[in-house]
Amino acid sequence: MYKHIDTAQENLENYLETIPNKQSKLFYQTRIKKFFNEYMSQKHNILRPLNTINFHDLNTYIDQLESSDAEKLNYFRAFNGFFRYMYLSDNLQSDVMKGVNKPVLQSKLLDYISRVELIQIQSFIKDSNEKIEDRLLLGLLLYTGLSRKYVANLTHYQLSFGNEYVSLFFEFGESTINIPLKSTVVNLVRVYFNSQQTINPFEKIFKIDENYVSEKVKILNKKITGKPLTPTVYSNSFIKEALRQGNDVLTVSQLTLESVHTIMKHVDVEEYRIRKQQHILENIFEDDDKIT
Image (cartoon, rainbow, N blue to C red; front, side):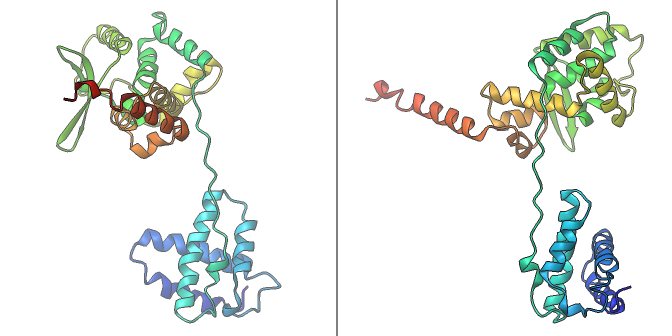
């Protein structure tokens, strides 16, 4: 065991007193303790005083962790809080965090439905021999771009049959947002309603747990395309196609109930910039002949 573990523990407890949130305390406590119990308890470190800990020690420990990049970043944040506190309270001779490399999270490549898979899914949705609930589930995911949490918890009450169009509506506090439906989905909705003997307005359309919806979608897609596509892949594909057609980010954000930040992940920034600039150039001074 590290010779100065009691002193380290005392400093850690003092640092934790500066953190009001209980969950945050646990975040720092578990990771700092692990550093002292594992790294500083090694034979070549066991006798070293606290004030000899340096950036090389912290970099070495983070690098050797058999963890994800996200978890390594958590350790960096825990170290940043604790060892900065140690420096400011004169328990370390220098701000060792200045030499610690911050782990970089690798952006995960987004998955999309391929053209072949799209045709296969569309054929399934149109096939009247398949269960209407399955067709409607995939139809809503494919043609609305809504995420699993919205589709999985839809109730009959949220379907609005207006004079001009059929839509879904969602209540957020005192505001209501209406999402119009594509005619393909409207037809599926009508078939679904006609298949029900009784309709309870507040009953869920899909009688399965939200978490199982993902599993259900993967099973269906494995059967249809050979790949276990998820609701997220459906949403990604809708957003990508909507942007490809030239729709602006804000409109797509409002249509899918996603943040602008989420939509921007699917934007080819250079292509988007060129398209916007072309629009400006094509329309600049177009009304010159009307100027008098």
